[in-house]
Image: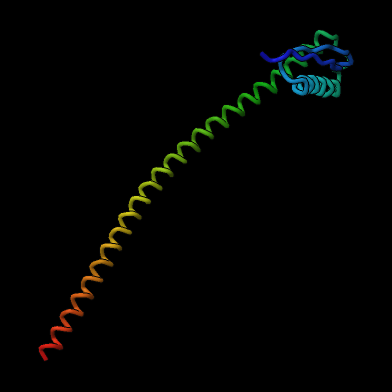
Length: 134
């Protein structure tokens, strides 16, 4: 079982202790994200004049907005990924068909080469026979 990690972070000007099984750098990344989001909201006109409950709700809404946008983007990427996989499967099947045709063509070339060699041998034999007769 993973070891529980604790980290002290500064969020919205307050020192908090986070604990969990996630790595310390991940916990710090989350705290930084929340802090950055809070600072982003602080730059909005009127935000600093709101009461703390309203500020928290707006911050939560902003984070939820980021989450749903990221989730929507992920869904689009998953659809694109599936489409690309289908395209890859189609191209693989096409490649297999072309490889089969190539093998068949190579076999035909080999067969034709054998026929040419046999014909050349027959021509030489016939020419030799004709020279003997003449």
